Image 1 (spheres, rainbow, N blue to C red):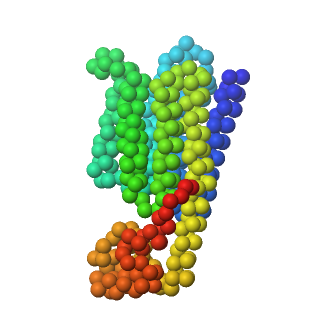
Image 2 (image 1 turned 90 degrees about the vertical axis):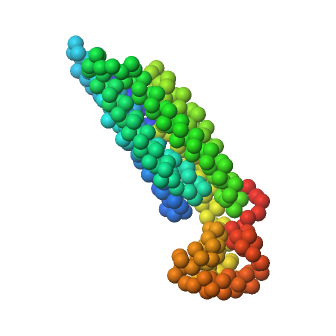
Image 3 (image 1 turned 60 degrees about the vertical axis):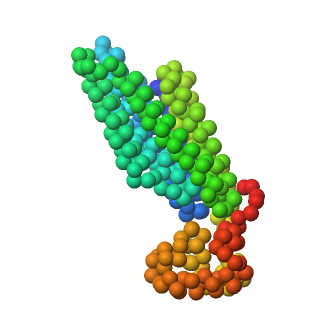
Length: 315
């Protein structure tokens, strides 16, 4: 009976996780945004990790035969599965950071990537040593495996989550388009609220109800930010396409001039635009002068405001 209840619960949770993946796929198809693609990768790895580390031990334990060595076998199961899932966990954390940074059109820096790999390697080694200690009590490590896992995992996750969300909240002010700025900040706050639920439960999920709450937050929690993105991001994309069509149509901007407008709005200098388009700097200046005349603007700031629709409003 307990096995049937466990299976039914796992099926419901996996169904919720697959629903979140389906939302991410639809969002990616509708918007073609890097944010949607990164969220999809993050969800897939998160689903695999959640099943392997949170569900598989319980299922394996329920299927163990009743023998005198059941306690030792149960302990081994609950140690082995989380340890083997550490590479998936490392991938989940890194993809989370990259996904959050994509809200402000950024990528993880090489320095952060190297530091993250070093910390993740330390996490894996610590768990391996503590697992070895569980079978060799004389091995000089003061903490038992579960303590090592919770401490190292929670510390690394806290560093990743806090640094990513603070970066978004601080750097989002540089986004020119007000709706993009609002989207980045609201999504970051939703993800922060979700993490404030997940992290405490990761410490105290030994009781059955707390374990179920932790599994629910892990498998179904991402439905919340995805529903917000699914409602908001396509609307922003439609608005941006409308602005672009108006710029090319009624403004009389040529395709080449439109490419230059995009690069100007990305903050690139004349020299950088020339390098990207393989044209001379003087040609860039000529195109820019014609763009200003056609659109009735005097400088890059006015052009960016016109193109990006930088005016007050809420999503």
